Length: 269
Image (cartoon, rainbow, N blue to C red; front, side, top):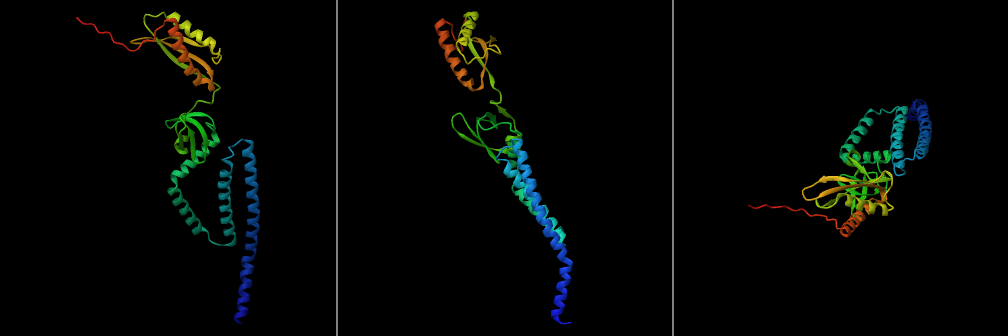
């Protein structure tokens, strides 16, 4: 048998052996890609119906799509007859090395996914977390950006944000404003309380329910401290807080009610 005939015979043998496998692998690849597209499309619709954050949808679809495609390629290679054990081992080692190198980044990514899924706060909320108070400017996949009241930008990694305590001041429509005003021991407590009620009645921002509370909160060293607790809309909190202190000072002055400063009495023999 000549070399040409041997080559042709060998080619026929390879074709008969691997041809059906190759065709089956191609068919499986085409069908698998179609199925993956259908899965990702369905997942996208489901996440939209459940109001998953728009910034999170492409990331989740990308990750799941990549995992499904890698699994499909490995399955197709196995169908052809190529040994994939070494390939999988190399892929796993590479994934481990990349994961260790990017451990902090991956933790922040996972934290961002948790924040976007469970939504403990949203853009525009006033929050306190990781020792910072500010309005949420943006929620990114790796970081959360706050704007502080004095207009500073604070960028917080999502990993500690998602695992640490979060105080959200914007989730409730109403908030309680707690204030304390000191009067002298020689002043009339009832007159001071009536003066405070007079201020509250003139302020439309103060809610009628729950009713305001004005009581003696403390007999301090230099003053009798009156505790006043009122409820207002969350957006009016700071306006009520600051304005109330100004109005109390002016009315106390007008009515002759003193606001004592710390003082010490000394007795000599």
